[in-house]
Length: 135
Image (cartoon, rainbow, N blue to C red; front, top):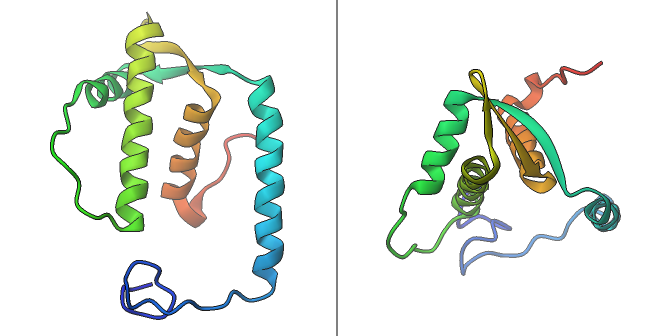
């Protein structure tokens, strides 16, 4: 939705738009998903993943990068992009601290939220073309 249109949520002139009734159900579903996440969080700490060396090095470079300066007001998309960049940098930190080279790959234990963030970014980038490699 473009800024300045009803319900955009990004500007002072924004006029709130009531959600269709099904979104009340979706909000409840989101709360249930968060409750499940609370239990997953208590049970799962890290998952072991294998990364191609080039991706591992790029993640470490993201961690080593120094992003200086204050940020201006962000759009929702900019906020989400910065969050993904932060997740990448944290994967780079894990690689630099705990990664071990096995041939051309790096094996690293990632916190499940970072592994999930990377998977979600992949799924979102693929869009409607996403197909799980698992049957």
